[in-house]
Length: 357
Ligand SMILES: NC(=O)c1ccc[n+]([C@@H]2O[C@H](COP(=O)([O-])OP(=O)(O)OC[C@H]3O[C@@H](n4cnc5c(N)ncnc54)[C@H](O)[C@@H]3O)[C@@H](O)[C@H]2O)c1
Picture (cartoon, rainbow, N blue to C red):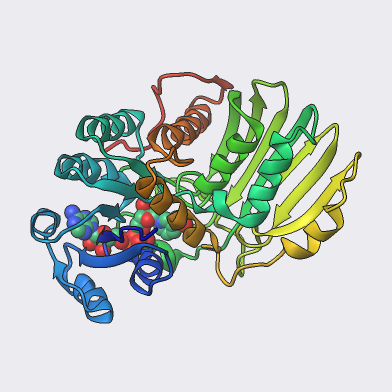
């Protein structure tokens, strides 16, 4: 059967646009192609347009009106995602938006509502869910191999020197970015909840150790999950002199799995009390460290997006999933601000993330 090819367009031609444009523009995703790009800073858009021989725009509305687009990909500053998604939804095209989907729960709700009303799918970029060792771990969890869950841990020890934060004024601000928890570690927070289940409460501490930014560059969080298991998040961009790891481990009465590497890509431990015949192969087949912290997951992520649109199937990475990890991040900040354990569900009162005062 010949499948329709989906036309993708990018809004925002900054750092992460390189990854998206290469996948979509160099035919690395089946049934997808890049047809247009836009950026407020026109020469940023021009550069991508020249590379892929496609039209470019400074105004996203002009792009949406002029070009035949099936899916628009929002790669703007985190605190602007909601405004852009809400403005784009009425064009009736599916929307992919980078993580974190938004900074406030009200913004996340507005995005979900706008896409529902327009009848379009909303996809949040959570590429680490598609890392092969992560999918293997999820498979073992669903198969019940862990039995009672005991402890889940994520660790992000990355290096972001001051020059990284200084390259754009939005980085590290409460209004548009947040700190390590919202930006770099939001993938890991999402993975922990995806594996361990709903969170009952969190208790957190954070500090701005080395970077000159408003939000935190280092945080530790303890979590209690609804199923009784405990969890730990350790996140920093103040590792020096280079990135050390992005890892996830799950321990249960039936076994333990640890995935490490820079970007949760390398199987480090795969050990069960009831071994199965393919267990020996897992360590060798699922242990490739990627060349950078973005990892390999974007490609599998896009294949999933395209499949979900063309076959109208349910997808793993919708607005409600994005909102869930955002709620957890907001609860963590609430705990940092109040010095108290914060139960979920909750309504933020003191969390500064997304605040423009
Ligand atoms: N999935 C990942 O691993 C990953 C990695 C890096 C960044 N990100 C996310 O991607 C987003 C962008 O990050 P970045 O590092 O590329 O930022 P960036 O500052 O390099 O790029 C953002 C671009 O958006 C443009 N822009 C803003 N408003 C616009 C508008 N109305 N129309 C057109 N263009 C507009 C800006 O001019 C800028 O060029 C952030 O939300 C970030 O958290 C995700």
